[in-house]
Length: 222
Image (cartoon, rainbow, N blue to C red; front, side):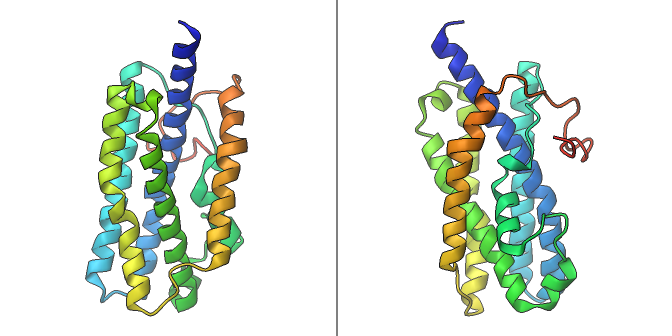
């Protein structure tokens, strides 16, 4: 394998592993969001259905990336929450991990619920911009299967931030505070410039032994 081919293989391996983590993190975390929405605004059927679709799309994307690895006969790299944009964002805004989010408090306090909607909206907008960039990357475009996956993700992405933006506007809420946009920007930069390159060059990173949808503890000790 020549140098370019080796680089490309490693790039796709790392990228796919990060997306496996984030898509799994996404759809499992949206179960908490659905719970909060059904309790906070049970009358808003359209909004709840939009979150259900968001959850279903994230699960679909996870399955596509899983299939990409399966066809190559290998497991994804074992990444952890340091590669999760939403993990860092939740910690920055709420001061706790996703697991420690107090769903009851978010349901009871309208300001907390709108804050959650803004975090999801900004995260998904960031994800949409990233997909647009990736679909111009020659390493992605060189792999037909990976290109097809990101084309599907590209089509789905607008439905992942627009419902939250629409809900915020309908309730006269601020769609994004400057502190939240600043946090989103710096989280993205730290991931792109520090954490992801570190994963790329760290050859000792182990691979998952089981798929995360088969054992939700697989990332616990990552």
